[in-house]
Image (tube, rainbow, N blue to C red; front, side, top):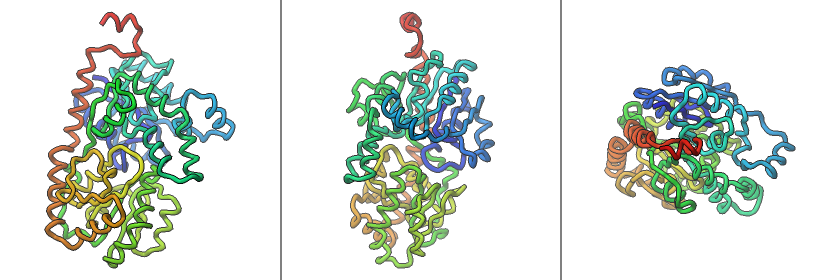
Length: 412
């Protein structure tokens, strides 16, 4: 099969967060298929191009589009068929043309829009030849924005989410409806989409982890510390850190004064950087390798309370053998069992208590870290998810693309 993947950011080997899914799909699909990539790339990521080149038949990387002027943003808000939330940082006729040119040149069997925001470039693109279009939904933007809108009190943030919601539901779900296939990461994600549009054709392709790279490590490498990893350009990650620091950390620190808290990942905003006023909190910024931080930590936390989708960071921590304390939302999609292979906590008191239990109960600590690793090995090795995706695409080959001429579709 010939497969073109598209992504909102360059999915290289060192990336943190969701794009690691695309990197591994590229890597493993390229073993048996012709695979190419079209993605936006920032200047600082160009050094990672060699980590992807060998997997790609064709690699097209374009700079992020320039920021819209206020006048253009207002005009788009009122008159563009594409919603504001999709255009705010991804309005790019160049990407639409790039994808269309690649399909014209190599006649791909599939174009996969990794992240719904990339769907705008293959949905009703007049330049795009007939091709099976797949929407890979890492997070339903409408549902995530609605959740944020309901979470915030009236003020600037709630107003921003109201603006983001304009036209989003209709456009996003029409995009899914007109695609040849929709992919979800979890059963919960699939159910949420079907609740809104029950006619969608959805399959589940799970997240994964490189169980060889993220090897189970001895606890003698660790210091007494907790860690959270995220891309802080994604607001739910920033909110998770601030929520933890303000409402949970004071209790945890009181119970274990020697404990450190590592905040790892790119683009921490000023309010997160300011947390370093506490000498026990370390904000690293972007790192090329999260492994040293995972290995020296005692516990991985995931206090996420906004957004949706799947947190691959939990799988990485489980693979390394670090027990997890997470909100129920943070562990969405993982068949984890509270008190067996994870600690789930949805309020500050339970969260701080869960951390304290793991710090002082070696039997529980070793049970959760061992069973967490077992869960990852059995269900989330990358090869398993890619085989599921491969089978789905193979099963679609008998049908013509939905955007093929009607005469072609009728003849099949």
